[in-house]
Amino acid sequence: SGSSHRDESMELDEPVRPLNDLSTDAIPILHNLARMYYRSQNYDLAMDMYLRALDIAQQEEQPSSSLANTLNCIGVIFFHMGGNNEKNAIKALNMFNASLDIRKKLIEDSKDPTHFSYKVLRQELATTMNNKGRIHYMLGDHDAAMVIYIDALKLRREILPYPHLDVAASAYNLGQTYHQLGNLTKAMELYEEFHSIVTRFFVGKKHRNLAIILKCMAQVHHDQSQYEEAARLYFESLETTKAALGDFHPEVASLLNKIGNMYYENSDFDSAIRVYEEGLVVERAVLTHDYPNIVVTLTNIAQSQKHKGNYYAALDRYSEAHALQKTILGDKDPKVAVSLSNVAQVSCRLGRFTQAFDAYQKVLQIRRDAFGDDHVEVAATLNSIGLVLFKQGFHEFAIQSFRESLRVRKLCLGSHHRDVAVVLYNIATTHLEQGDEELATEYYAETLRVERTALGNDHRDLAVTLQHIGQIHRQRGELDVSLGYFKEALRIEKLNLGDSSPAVARLLNKMGNIYLAKADVTNMMRCFTEATRIYELCGEAANGDLEISGYNFYCLSITNPECAAAA
Image (cartoon, rainbow, N blue to C red):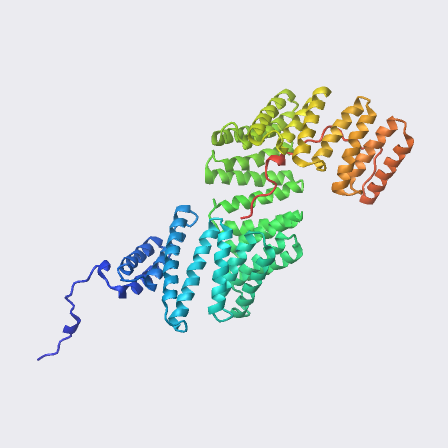
């Protein structure tokens, strides 16, 4: 007969069976399809493939390694579908726990611990333990994560050859957990182990994993205020990240932000601004224009400019941050109130009191709408409004705002909180500016009482209050009483700042003036001579009379964070 291209043995006319009718042989195929979707971040289709595999695996007579693997993979997909969502995190945790139960049973039932399959089962057990630890870490349960990571690392060290990247991964995870728990010594030991392993695998290469661990090691030194070593490691990490990922990458921007934070904390504001600005260029190149990290970087630049006294530059960046924050979140979000409060604060520093007042009024409305009238953020805003009104000379309105702030703070924080003392102090100072020494003295005395309860007897806030009370008694001619307050203030300043601080010199100068009024020449000369010595030591000029004109207010920054959170 003639030749035919059809092979009858292939049975091409057999109908295709639905996936849920497939045998266990289909599980690896479904897993491969799921991995393909997973790698393309199509988690819904990946989940569908894994659930089909689960249906097949659950039909087996006894729980198998295939079932454990499938449960583990479903847990991973739940994590990537929204691990920060507690509901998905719990689902992932349940999958990992079910997988672990099966793996442990399979290991217990294994007849030959020397067989290759036994080793594979233990490797898979360590993998699922690692995944479970990650969920606990992400949920903030670092103690639980630590216990699991310790066991996973111990198991991997037992069964894997050294060095091995899985051992490095477990060391890194446990190091991160110790870092979060504040055990920096343990964290550094594990980071160094990770670094040692990674450098063996990627000798001479600028690899992302190497950049990551260098950053972590830098952070440990940073947390310990070891800025020189932190800077060395940060810049090595930056160089490695750029080599691995290019100059314009989100991880480059993140590193620049951390370096900027380090300079900021070290009061090197010029370097902080330079690095933050470099990071801003990268962020604007690689992120969408309304990405939240850009708000953080703009705010960090503004804070640094403010600390340098460059208030106009600070206002520009704060205004940019606020405008972008509004674009992202809308007009009514409490975070928008924070950025607008920053604008108001610097406007006040620049003497733009009307602009500051209007901004704070908007902040107040946002916070009242979001939190209600009796909330600490509302109280903070009322205090700031009172300060602006005081600076404009509207003392009665300022006192009204301060008193409402005081009512809310007492309600929310109790009567013996430092923030309550702040408002009492401001009320006292406003009464003093109005010339009402009696009321001023009453409020300063109440301020002092709250400060002693909240802060103890040696805090610098007390020194400021004591000086104001002392000054009132001096103006009344009650010189001995006045000296008593100034002496206690001097003791506190010396305790906190040392004997040779300019603040100590200023207090000695005030006391010298009181002794002069008392005609106590010996003590007068002792105070003036010591004040002069300190000024010369500090390189400052000693003026004949350094009495401070006006009154020292708590700065507005008390109600607003001094530095934005790292990206």
